[in-house]
Length: 329
Image (cartoon, rainbow, N blue to C red; front, side, top):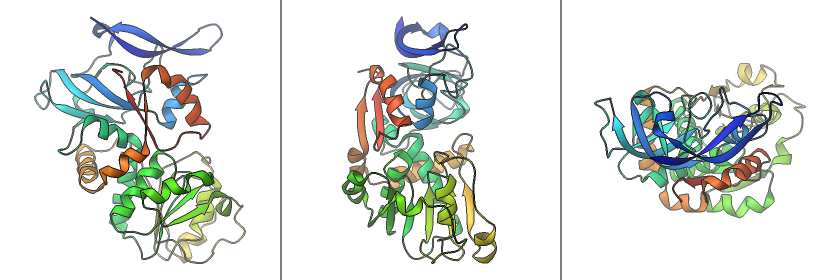
C-alpha cells in the first residue's frame, strides 16, 4: 500500500531542490527497528531550511524532512515497543540525515523513540514538539544551576522555543520577561504568562559596556549573536543563560568580564542527541508542568500541502508559536 509524504528532491545538474507530495511505499523507508504510523509533526526552523531552496541541512536526496513526530507503533523488532504503543521522537538528525516526520509513516531506530507520557495526546506532544522539548531542557538546566530572584528573560519569545519557555516558566511561578520584535505579539505573550514585554530594539544595540545593571535572574536565549552578548552584561551575579538558538548568528561579540566578575554561566542546550533518561525526564516534566490550556493559543494547524509555504514563512520570522501538522488531513 502507498502513503503520502512530502519528498524533497534535488536536480543533479542545476543543484536546485523542490518539494512535492509524493506517494511512496514502506519498502522505500530507510532501515530501522520500529515502524510508526505518524499522526502529527511540526514545522521548526531546521525544517524551513530543509524544505527551502538549496535544501539547507539535508544530507541525502531524495529526502523526507520533519525533525520530530508523534504517532502509533505499527511494527517493531524491539521488545521495548509493541504495536499500538504511542511514541514521540525528537532529534537524532531525523529529517536531516534520516527520513523524518513529513510522511504518514516513518521507520527509525528504537533508541531514538520515547514512550508518550501519560496525559499527553500525540497532537499535544507535537504542539510541544522539538521546540518545547528544547524549552524544557533549558528550564531544567537553569533549575540545576539555581534560578535567581527577579524576572527570567526569554529572547525570541514569540517563536516556538520562546513561547513554550514563557508558558513553562510562568507555570512554575517565575516572573517572565519576553523579548519580541513584533509589538503585535505582546497580548499573545501576556496570555502565555509573560509579566513584562521587552522590545527587541532595547537589546539589539552593540555592547558598549561589558556590565550593566543586574536585571535578569535567568535567561532562555533562543536568538544568540549580539543579543546574547548584550544580555550577558545584564545578568544577576551567578545567574545562568540557557543558550539554544543561532538565529542571530554563531558569533559572540562579548568579553570575559560577565563570566569573571559576575560568575555568569552559559549553558549550551542541544536537543539532538540527548540521553534516553534525560529525554524521558524532560517529557515527563512537560506532561506535569506545562499548562495544556496554553497550548491552544500557541498552535497553528497545518497539512502536508501547507509545508513548502510554511517552511519559507518560518525562515522569515513570520510564524508565531507552534505549527502542528496533521499528516493524515
